Image (cartoon, rainbow, N blue to C red; front, side, top):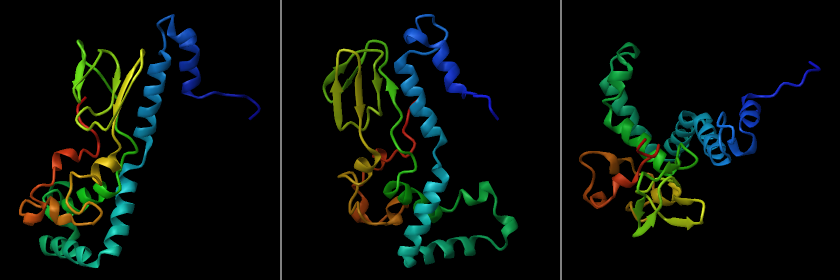
Amino acid sequence: MGTERGDFWDRIMIKSADDNKGGEGMSQGEMLNNAAVLVLGGSETSATTLSGATYLLLKHPEVMKKLVHEIRTTFASDAEMTFASVSHLSYVDAVLEETMRIYPAVPTISPRIAPKGGAVACGKHLPENVWLADVQSIARTRLTTRQSIVSMSYFGINQGPYFYRPDEFIPERWLSDAPAEFANDNKAAFQPFSLGT
């Protein structure tokens, strides 16, 4: 009990002395970005989505009724419910998609590095080897001599002009036969776990 033991990050700090001049660890920028990935990876995405879904279903009993109906008319017993069979429930999927649109399961968009030769975002050239967030969802650009960061909040995307009636919980917008009023929803803007490598 009296011994001080560090965690794995202590070893990274030791190996990364002097901004990793020895090449055995990580630069400060790499440490910052990896720390962000660890926080993201350690977040409770399933618990967040299920908590949000429970809240929204209790606030919208008509949606809960449709969800229960789909499940109970699809399966005769619990034994029929498997990962594969449940994945075919379109209304369950729509409820989960709509839940993640309203309550994003992931705290931030994952960072990206601009490719060799750089990239163009919103008409601005971003030099290669700079950290980027999801370039397809750009709201803010901050350029310095050392880095370029492009990002947009999930909440801003999901509650913004990409969706009709964005403040309302309407799972039907995600169905293949969605009401016509949702025909112009930009569902490609919805990327709950970011996109790309």
